[in-house]
Length: 342
Image (cartoon, rainbow, N blue to C red):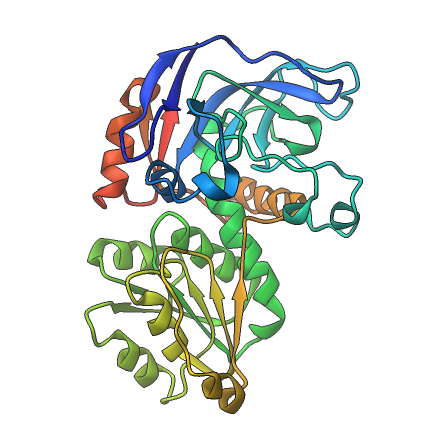
């Protein structure tokens, strides 16, 4: 089968012919990929940012936003069958450790992360995962239309879901970055809360899209955006700021846009937050980290997606054009999400 593999860091991946994955355990599932999302994390992988944390043996296949059809199942699999349409939680978990028992899938002690850890991902024709990762979809769902919800979608939804108790009517939320994750976060906010939504982005096209999908106000990130948000919130700032950028100074802008007793949810990464400790104490402000989400988050998100309340804005590429997709994402030429279709 064809697959997009990283051979060394700081170099483009290559499209190789490799053997199809095989079942290795009774709960394994082989999925024929119908769509694989191209994520900024894939760019970070190529830059070597995850090498020390995950230590994958090179070469390996990237791709952690995957949907498709069940191709083969292990003898112990009962929740899906061959032919089912599925979206895959990006991190298969064991279901037995304390974190799993508490519903905290992302802290599973025995998890693996295809496309990120030492396990081949889904930028390929087939992927091996486990039964616990499979969310069954309506059979008429096109996997390419929903694949990016497996990571970008669940990550944005997970952050919004955690913040819901703080976003009652009369509150304000800021979404910083209306790209691949942010445009999903805007829709999740509109679907789950009655908060006022302010969206901040550099790109006028991204702001125009934000208006179409639920933003009440938009602010261009032009150096005066922090003050613009303050002006829109009577000088206080937002009750919750969702930072989908969190690099190149945006992480510190987000803190300045957060109101006293408010919370800054950090979803993007790459930067460094520098805040005097007195600001925490005097403002009683919070910083909350987020990593992907739970199986239940993904299942709930798919209910919204299949009801048409959350939709992905995508640009599709054939698997052979994976390098074009990665380069377009890196250059900011992708509005929404790039999807590889084998």
